Length: 202
Image (cartoon, rainbow, N blue to C red; front, side, top):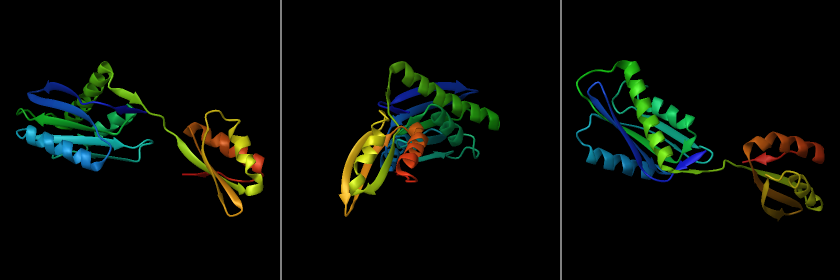
């Protein structure tokens, strides 16, 4: 998964309409609202300000807005490109100045798709990405006398990182992180080692 670290843009013309796509790094709703407000003020003469966004690692929220274009022809295609690029914590805004020639449903989908693809290509060329690891957090609860067992399990998986161990009453809790693809193997291994125990994933 990738996170954008600076603003990039891509401009092109399609049948007299001008499209300007900008990608902005932002991680919360207030940041997205501020960017959109600034762009609407700057490009007040534009016909549409369509947008799509994703946030979180792993992605916990996303959205899209057609801003007056026919439903499903702008925001959703833009979001699909962001998903395919595994990009997060960013806002894509595609600004259109209508030139008098209708593009039709298919033409709009292609144009808004091309806009985001072009901006992503510009970000690639400028090296504007940082890689982010997607991790799952797990909790293993055992009696205090067996507090060593989770460590024995996790020690066999180098990609698993112990975060903390706490004691609650007569029990011990071990919290750890690991890549998502390790979850099934850890579940299976702990069930065998603990004779039916389970890992709580959060």
